[in-house]
Image (cartoon, rainbow, N blue to C red; front, side, top):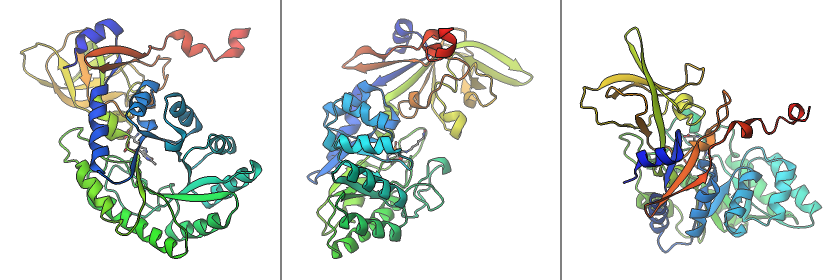
Amino acid sequence: MIDFKALAKEYGTPLYVYDFDYMSVQYTKLKEAFGGRKSIVAYAVKANSNLSVIKHFAKMGSGADCVSIGEVRRAFIAGIPAYKIIFSGVGKSDEEIREAIEKDILYINVESDAELQRVEAIARDLDTKARISIRVNPNIDPQTHPYISTGLHDNKFGVDLSTAKRMYIQANNSENLDPVGIHFHIGSQLTQLQPIREAAEIVADLIRSLEALKIELKFFDVGGGLGIKYDDEVTIEPYDYAQAILGTLTGLDLTILCEPGRFLTANAGYFVTKVLYEKQNGEKKFVVVDGAMNDLLRPSLYGAYHEIEALSNSQEELREVDIVGPVCESGDFFAKNYALPPLKGGELLVIKSAGAYGFGMGSNYNTRGRSAEVAVENSQARLIRRRENFEDLIALETEFLED
Ligand code: LLP
């Protein structure tokens, strides 16, 4: 049990708290699900890019799935070996591609024909061979929130099957490209196995048709996306997930790579915020807290549900309230019509499942410093990022500061 009151007292609020032991349990579950098969769990750094979090996974043997050179650098600093780092994203700059090749990471995940030409040109310039995989868009509806669906032709990600095949043939004939992998990622917060199985089947068939052309890949990268319980979702068991994927690979000897983010960190994280006031506009009741959409954007951006627990001994009847932050936007809420007991200023709310896409999607909107982050491991708490102060927020506005 994490003592949120003690942590809030020591580190202040709003505050992110991460249960590192829970992250270990999740990592192990997934790794074991692939059993004896060659596999790499490459943590999707975007879910929570705190260096201590990445280091925690590095120590367990994890790789890293990165979507900017900044994330690649984080992975290196945190101790992930180059041969377990991959770099994806639809819009990599020349500088990013160059640095990724120079750092000799496992592969660059190429997302368009135009990008393949850039990677080839940069590798030629560096007089080397760049390892690549190609992100295939299998045109499968993942049945998740439209903002986090990625595997349909309507989405900007990856290339269609026939383009992918053409790109593999080109890469295979190139002196400067080494096609080693194939990748798909159909969406996030997936709770249905069937779309994943269908996508894997389509991609496995493409691998077979490439083998017929003597193009032999080593890595089958199934992306991330495993859903978690925010509310009462029925989620996919890692074992079933692994079996569904392995079942499509009969006769193929490939290392499986998966890129979980949310599965590893979401339910390890808590956002602790303090009640400032209660107020009432007509019939509508609000609880105003010190955290806001700049700290945890998911409810505002996706209408996402997060369970909220009031740390209050109140025996009074629950009422429906909107839980809102101080930011000047009507969209600044954590929950609407949520049942909570009457609360006094200073009492705490714990917003759950906040360990993925929480802190990382934060901002300084309204000149609000980002929260501190604390890790709890073996019942010990430690600060892994201090709270941002006003000086941090203005430090880069150099013209004014130099006047
Ligand atoms: N691999 C690729 C290529 C991805 O695009 C993503 C997530 C992942 C792996 C990790 O997905 P996960 O295992 O975490 O589902 N901000 C949104 C989620 C955006 C996900 C973007 N891509 C949210 O708060 O729900």
